Length: 576
Image (cartoon, rainbow, N blue to C red; front, top):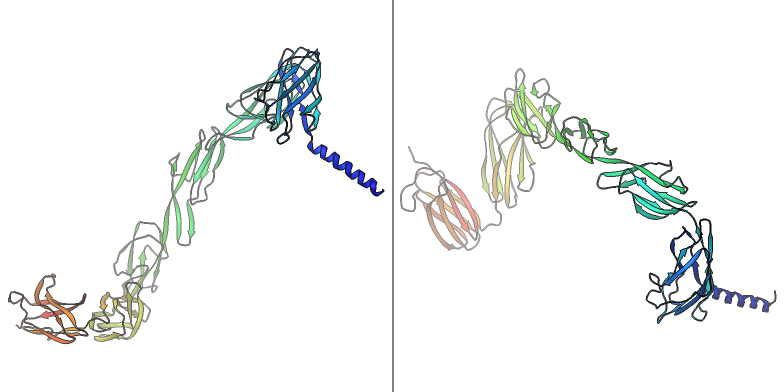
């Protein structure tokens, strides 16, 4: 191909493309009508926005033996309010229609409506054609598509249901059943209902059948017989089962008035030591049966109620020394309930106490169960390690000394000294070896040093060679470091007439010294004054502020300095 020929074809293609892209489509739909009908034929246009359309004119041709024109209007079209159309109907079977406005037309859809009266008979038809169409002075260009009107017999298509208020889709349009539409013989229509139609919380309708045997969505051809359609729905209700445990069975949809069966497991094991036990059903039924049924005449809810049970593990420190009730390995107890445990030693053995989840010498022992519990019944021989006393012997600065004494010892491995603070648990801080088996008393001592300021608790844990443990009572003490007072003491103590209280100040400070009885009542007030750093002595003759002698007994000396307090115990004893 020569170069100039290529250029010519390219130029032609550009011209054609430009023309096609600028074209507006004007169409007429096809219609089915009945004799003596009044029908409106709409002339439709594709989007004409931004095309500068300010006027239009065209000729409409039709069979005047079938159609009789009545009027032409713009109401309800995109040209509504644009002005009144002019119409020339002088020639039978032909209408010349035109209109113009003060502003360009915009949008798409119907822009002219032509109303006809049907004067033809069944079987007649008329082509409806558009000719000589022109926007403005011929721009933009127009492509027209003609339509046809066929005169047929009309019938009523009725769609009913056994349940009112159901939705139906006919040829793409949605209606509510029951619905009656005018259709024409020989036409086909797509009739469709949703297989499942929800009608509220827990209620739905499920498609069952059409009376013509069609599926939920099917095509119907209209003749003199197929005019009345009826669809049947099954009403269903939902059974909801609320249960956190027990693997419930039976939740779901049920046909109206059918029987719903539901059940749950009696036990649900959450762990080796925790399980949930079924108690009863609540909601729309109240029953204690694991399996039960309901008549589904409405949507319903049932809830399975469970109680948590925790296992109490019972063990023995030594076998063949005794037994417990309940016996080993233990039992399930409902959370929050109390369980009574009893230990019975055999032969020449004794019950030492409970350990593990509960340290107690009570027998029987009653415990409220709020979690799984491991508890051990401790049995030993008849000759225990018997403490004569366990006390804090002395406290000095950041050290504290403990003293305890045994009366007898049988199979005594030794003592662990346990210490805790308000923020920590008990920990082993020392071990003092025992004397095995002995019928004589023995004294034991332990000094805890380099303690930080704070509150401390101490206990003894006596351990037998068979690893049986026994705990003592706790002793509390308070350590104050870097205090303004290093020492508050008295001598002699106990005393019967006079005693000297001595304080050692590490800095000049305001000092207040008072004596109280065990009821917290002030007995004697020395004085309040500022003292220099060093040692200061105060004499107390065992008298109150009124100069009267006080009864023998224990008194508390309280020293206040710079907001800090120090306490010391005094013992007044009269000679016999």
